[in-house]
Image (cartoon, rainbow, N blue to C red; front, side, top):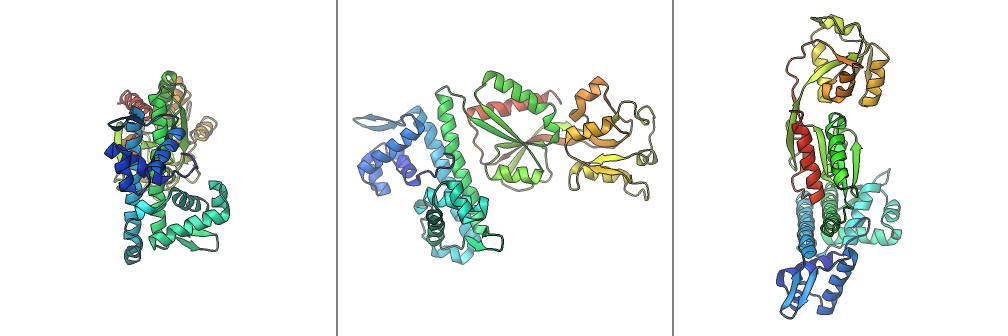
Length: 405
């Protein structure tokens, strides 16, 4: 559905017709006239460019695309209902004063306005993002606040901040809209058009073998799909995952789970190594000591990353032995360049530089790091329901990961 706000009333009418297989009975449930329901379904079918129902003398029945759309429409409504419930819990007694059936009254325009304000922190910028006038967006946002009886917005010196209740509602609204986007993709897939988009959040290890292998295999069979790979800090990628901006993450798994609404799946175990350029003074030296390692400059990840913790552990308790020359870097391209042009040492997975090791451009030092095994795998939202193409891509990643076990 992109930036266009879906008409949630039309979706409710569609679901009622699907449930009762009757426009007249659906009319009684959603309080719309039969012509209005017929028009609502026609608009949805036009936007999807497919028929959702077969009209017969004994009722109206879902087509195959209609069944696909029904699953996504139900999931979208469930997300909205859950978002309203969670927002009210956070608001406490204040949230109890709003309409009891808020999830049935809220409009797509109101939720889109909320999301836009969350993304921009400004009503004027939010209106530009949505593509409506500033007064219209402001009115929609304030109408949502009035209906819910929950404070959603706070003025700050930097602009507009969302309250905790508003942030929760905005997240679930984004998940609901993402379901409707998935519906479009699934229907196009069912009609033989691979026009879907897969968004992968990736951490360093997956970029060197698993992800390139899977991308090449899937796009060879389905050249019409778009795959977007997003690099970044784990915290930022996790945020994108939870807000449906990213479909799944691939990389080092976290223990314990960072938050309860995601699940992890291990693909293989990985171990760390000390990597240097070919011909490094320490390359052929056996029984390396902490003192040997401290005499050379290092490249390390930023603080808070598990690999950085391992680096700190090497020199823990070795007063005065910690290397004085340290470069913090996460870019594998930069790390490779620094290693090949200097006597620096870094600590990372040998899988990340498997090609350079095979070519003899880089080497692993003979130093016992102890048990550095860590789980590499996939992270999903608990409630994620992939399209057929997304499921195929995930299965291809699993196969690529199994080759590294």
